[in-house]
Length: 106
Image (cartoon, rainbow, N blue to C red):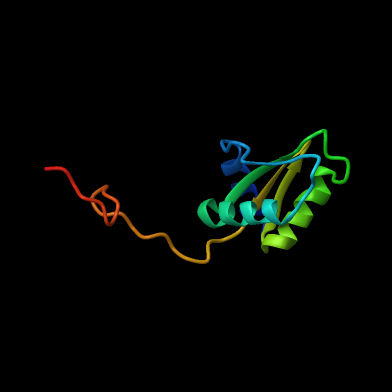
């Protein structure tokens, strides 16, 4: 990832809410699965390491999750981190503002 791409992703991550929290249980299969699903849906994800997590620093948690989900660490600031992974599938395009397979009201 180039520095320009990383800077653009950091800017996009500013407005994101934290969707993943790592607590006293650390990083398990469930947390990795949740991160994987979130990255597939959003591409960009913000996480946080809580004070109750004795095993991981924000940097080590971000690197562990990145290697487990085949993503890249964009940024680590304080207790928060940002991960990025390009989608494997392209989302289906909407036509005329209506989602596919939905009935329209007339």
